[in-house]
Length: 111
Length: 111
Image (cartoon, rainbow over all chains, first blue to last red; front, side, top):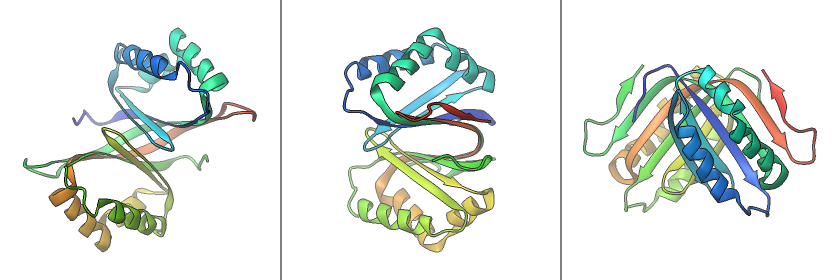
C-alpha cells in the first residue's frame, strides 16, 4: 500500500446538500475516470457527516491534468450547483509514510 | 476553514478488526487530547469500509510531539493489539488549498 515518496495527495472534504440525486452515479463514474489518468496512484473515500476523499498522484502535473479533464470539469460544476454545500481541496506533498499490518512485521517506517 | 499555508496534514487510514470494544471512547479521548496540543489546527474523520482521519498541524514538530505523547502512545499500542487490522499514516505538507461555499463568492483559490 505504500508508494514511492514523494508523491502527492489531494484531500477533498465536503458536506452535501439534501439534493443528492445523481451523485452516486457521478462519483462512481469520476472514480473510474480518475483511475485511468496518467500519474494516478490510488483513491480512498469515506463519508459520515463529512465526506473525505483522498486521491494520490505521482506529480502535480497529473493533478492539474485531472482537474482540467473535460468530464471532470462538468462533474465539478454539477457538484457546485447541486450536490455540495461546501467543499475544500488541499494539494499535499506526501513526505513520510508508515504502515501497520496485523500479524506481519509491524510498524515499518519509511522516511 | 482555510489555514495559513504551508501547514501539515496527517492522513490516517485504517481498517478495523471485529473487536472494537472500547474504540469509540478512546477515539473521543484522543481527539480531545489532540485538540489540546500545541500546533494543533483541526481534525476531520469519516468511516465506512475504510476509516480516514485527517489531522492538521502547524509544524512537523507538533506532529512529532503528538506522536510521542504518552497517552497517545498507549492508544497506538492498544490500536495495534486490538482495534486495527491495518493502518497507514502519511505526513504531508499542504501546498495549495481552495474552497467552495454555496451561495458565497465561490471557489476562492489560495496559492
